[in-house]
Length: 297
Image 1 (spheres, rainbow, N blue to C red):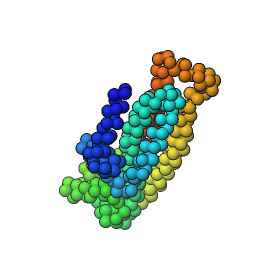
Image 2: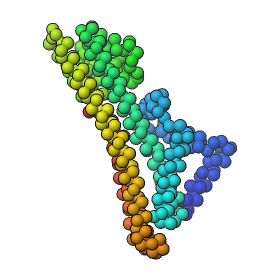
Image 3: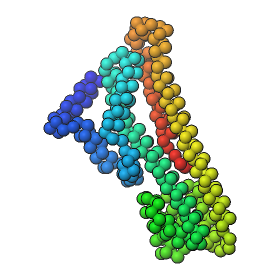
Image 4: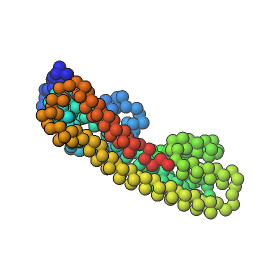
């Protein structure tokens, strides 16, 4: 363990000297960015670029604040548990290493929320355009030219229009879009347009109005779920941190000196390590739940 700690410190010093006094944070942030660009799947790189474009990407100060808060909390908790500086440093390093993963979860959530809002705009406006044009492809062209959509949804709508003209039908273009955005409101709306196009419904106004009402109700439920998740997330993090502090109750019951004597037993240390690992798994799992599948009905 001591050797590992010294190797980490030596790597930090060498990196700093190698960069001739440049900002060490900038060096490591650039290194992490290069790793992302090299090994991350294309889909995630596209997601990350979009969140940067929308202004959702954390600044250097925000990342530094996260490192300070999470690393400081890990250091305080591990020291209270073990009263061992080396163990504390190791836990701080591990905690800071989880920050990119937490950033990844946050990025996915923000992108998911953005896509859902774009899909909401797409479905609502296609229905409005169809009431005027009575043509699905013309409706897509109207939404495309309105300037209300952004990539990647705009790019995929353009692809739908191209496929419709090339194939002479809307079937393949609809299947293409449904696979990319498997939302119920997209599939239901497209199914309605297929029926109208193939069966030649004379009066589709009432059906489209009902579809608009269904979309509004669906959107309302999704936004309600988003607010419920935020409330749950706050309570969950609070509860998780309280679980870490239960060891302080043990120290109050047994006394600090008696607690330190208990730490001399290897099995007591093992149990404490397991408590920390289980609590951390509990927190990370909850964070994953909070950030995943946002906007998916």
